[in-house]
Structures are given as C-alpha cells and as structure tokens.
Image (cartoon, rainbow, N blue to C red):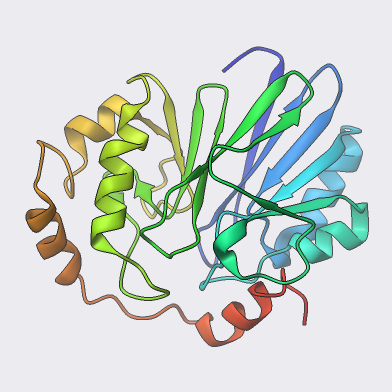
Length: 232
C-alpha cells in the first residue's frame, strides 16, 4: 500500500462484518466501504477526530446479515452513497458500472463487477488492495444459495478476475470467522480449499451445493431496508 494512503478497519461483533476506511493522508479525502448501521457513531467519531473529508460511502451489495449504515452516515456527514448499478437499490447517489473509477485525490477506486454471492456485487480495488466482500474469503468463499447467487459466476469471477491480479495484491474480505484480516492473491490461489489447485467448476459446485447453511438471522429485516440504502 502506498504510504500516502491511510487504512483502518472496524469489525461488527454480531455479523462479523469488516468495514474499511481508506483515506488520502495529504488531502484527507476518504471513503468508507460497507458501513454497519449499529456502528455509525464509531465511524463518525473517528472521521471527525482525524478531520477526514468523507467523499464516498460505498456498499458492495445488498447485504442480508446486517443493515447498511450508508443512509445514517450520509445524514450525519452528508456525502455520496455509491452502489453497483445492478443492485436495484433506491436512493443511492451514484450507480457504478464495471471498470468505472472514482477518484480519491490521486488514487483510483476501481469498481469490478464480481457477482456470484448475489447478482449485484462488486469488488473494489484501491492501489494494491482488493476488497472482495462476500466473493472470496480467506481460505473460503461466500455462499451462493440465495439472492440469485451462482456457483458458475462466483467461480469465474474468482479465477478469471480476482486471480488475474498480481500475486502480492492483498485480499480483504467482508467476513472472517477465524480472526484473520487479509490474505494475498497468491496465497488464495495456493491455499483456498474451495478453489485451490485448479479445481474444476464441477468440483467447486459440489462443495458449494453441499454447505447447507442456515439463512442469516436478519435477512427479513435487512434486505428490505438495504434496498433503500438502509432507510426505514
């Protein structure tokens, strides 16, 4: 990571969601990715404490396990909510396209369409950091069994998009249930048990279809509100 970028993360204890804050240290221009409603006070206090200039509030997809803090954060600090154009969400300020770039002072935020977990998901690439949300975890992947998830799309986007970046690029997922924060492209190519060693799409699908995971506890509350950027 370039030394003019500041990086910080928060963990939501209930959903184990990571929220990331990236700031340009010279200009203080800042983006926050996937804020959680219950933690908005923490974000606001930190942003005001360091005198950051919050420029973008970015969500990666319509979450099912927590309510996004995007609208609450916008109300407090009044900045732009950005979402992927295929999320079918109301009240976002900008709807991003594949390979579209946002400017954080002298650094690009690249939007990369990477559906699989849901149909409207993106990853964000900032410098040598890839924020892979619920697509690629550390030694795992997100689920594909609801919200128009797809084993084929997930497999293709991991192997043909994420794994095409240099091996030393850092992977930052949106969940990790073992206390890990980051990995690298090379480590996941070699060690990720769901997709390593050039597993075929058939092998990957067999693993995913046998997970039998329970639905998120907050799905009935979270989905309707997240379709409105967290508004009631």
